[in-house]
Length: 304
Image (cartoon, rainbow, N blue to C red; front, side, top):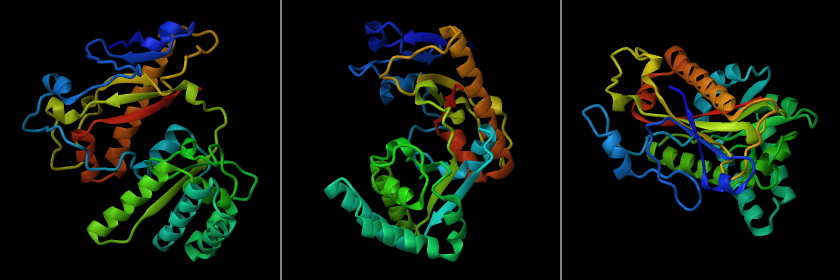
């Protein structure tokens, strides 16, 4: 099925269209912010509850980024990537760093030093200092929080102190950390904080990034069998693709038409979706399979 191109309200006020790409059968309601708004009473007639599917909040975290590093590194052909764990006992120190930023707009140097000195002194953190040598540039992510969500370090990260400043100056990081803390308390387990680190790719631009929505496969009657992974990737359907920076005009890459861009994005989204389902087949457990089938999710596609 071909995507059609629907200009949003703001694109009518510019010479270069801001695009919302979606399948012809989707129903849209637009509010004054020019973003598509779907509410339950609109969705239910198209995707009704059934024996296999119920509309509900998904049980997993908004990003669950730590599940997908192998898939991401393969998809982006990354040569250098790492995963570091922040010890649970440093949670309170990191929260003091956050409070310092909220109160002053900066993170107090003594707090940053306390946090970094303790972190890199641990045996389990021996590779962190080698990674953050002050020269190489890294993309640092804490689940839902990406570099752009940091007020102090919105771009690449070069040092471990910058990692602390990045995490301490992001509202999303605060939310992620407290969600992990609350979950650990309820489940009576140790808090887990994973920082994912990939080589910085300067050629990636949010201006050429798109977000694709995948409908819940369970709504089509798909049921996970006794053996995890026994489902067809075709069971997962792309229902909409939107421009990531939907408030900004979209400038076409040189030599491409809007329809060519739409076709490239759709093809890329299908390939990313195939990578995800293959990864689930090969390495993830039944719980993740069930969440993929029962919950809608989004994937990001970047034109390069």
